[in-house]
Amino acid sequence: MNAKTVLPAVAMTAVSMVLTLAVVVMWLGTAMPWPVALVVGLGIDGGWLATLAYERRLAAQGDRSNGVTIVGWCFGLVATGVLVAHALTAEESTGAWLAVAWLPVAAKALWLVHGLWERTALTPGALGAIRGIQQEARDEAAVARARLRAEAATEETRLTAVTQAGARVARVQAKTAQTLSRAWSTLETARDGEDTGRALTSVTTRVTPGVTPTWDLPVWGPTEPVALALDAAPALTNETLDALVDQIRHSENPALSYREMATRFRAAGHSASEVRLRAAWKRVAA
Image (cartoon, rainbow, N blue to C red; front, side, top):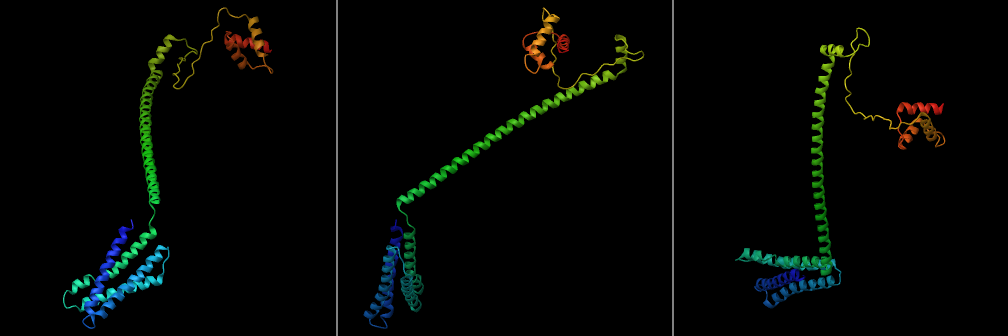
C-alpha cells in the first residue's frame, strides 16, 4: 500500500535532483569552472536529500521536527529558484525550462502526501473490521427500510379495507333510513287522513260519544322482544306456589327481593304467570 505514494515521490525526487544538478552545471559552468558548478549542484541536492532522509527517520519513529521540515522546504525552494532563474535567462526554450522548474516543489509535496498517508494508514485487520462494521450498518439500514415499507403497505391496505367497509355500511344505513323515512311518511299520511277516521269509526267502538278512537304509529327504534309467560300444565296450586315462593325468598339472609325470587323461581324450572307469582309473593310477604 505504501508503494502507491512512495514510488511517485522517489521518482519525482530523482528527476528533480538530476535536473537541478544539470542546470547548475550548465548555467554556472560558463561563469566558473565546471567542477565548482558541480559541487554547487551536489550541495543543493545533497542538502535536500539529507533533510529528507532525516524527516523520514523521524517519521519512522512517530516524531517530527518543524526545523528540519523548514530547512527541507528551503532547499526545495532554492532548487526551484535556480531552475526558474535559468529558464528566464536562457536564450532558447524558456517555456520548456519553466515547465520543469516546479519539479523540486512537486517532489516535496509528494513526500508530504506520503507522510500523511503513513500517519493515517491502518492495518489490514483494522480495515477489514471497518468494512465489516460498514456492511453491517448498511444491512441493518436496508432491513429497516424494507420493514418500514412493508408496514406502510400493510397499513395502507388495512385503511383501504376499513374505509371501503365503512363506506358500504354508510350506504346501507342511508338506504335503510331513506326506506324507513318513506314508510313513516306513508303511515303518518294514513293516520292523519280523513278516510282513516271513517274506516276506524265503522269497525271500532267509540270510547267517548262523538270521539273517534285513534291508532298509534308503530315505534321506530330498538325494541326488546317480550316473551309471553305461559303456565305449564299442570298449573301449580296456590298453596304449592306460596310454599315455593316462601322457600326461595328465605333461601338467603336477608330475604330476597321479588325480582331475585322470580329469577330463581323460573331458573329452577317452575312455571307460573306473572300475576299469580306476584299474588303469591304478596300473600307470603304480608
